Length: 208
Image 1 (cartoon, rainbow, N blue to C red):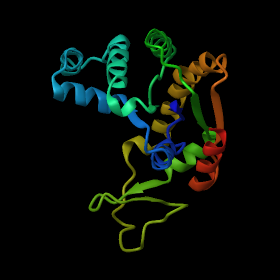
Image 2: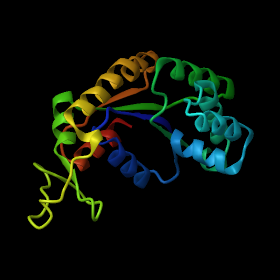
Image 3: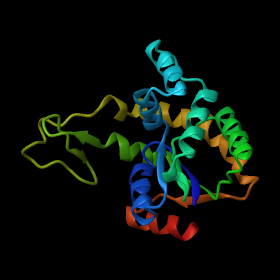
Image 4: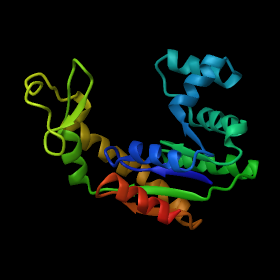
């Protein structure tokens, strides 16, 4: 099974990725961040190029990231399938990846999109609080912090309404337009992401 996992911030993508990997241990979990760090650590030719961009404070070019993805797909643990998580994020990235996959004779089976209304995402994220002493994450509505830690929990900068709204706007303007490229291939699976994680996981499994 070869798939891409999409979803806006706060849609539960991380939770569902972990559940998918539990049910399908034969597939490799591919995060571009992990790939970049591994390539730099291994000192591969692409890793050295990526490292130079990152040290200069620049974004790694799309063609270089696609090259890293294709290099990673050649490794043995990807032969029985993979899940690309968080890539591609833009139409140019998707087009470059599509071209590289076609050239390598690799066909995607599924593009799973977890859908959650923006207002619910804002509610989910802005309600999060972190205990700076333990790192524990709570939610003021769904999982309130115990009384003994209530005074010290904090809201992270990424969890403010302004930050969430900005991240959602970026997702809708840059990532949502990627989907028609895959809808034309008939491989997009739209998943209702509202509800308990186990119910969302069942919807994903049914769609697959």
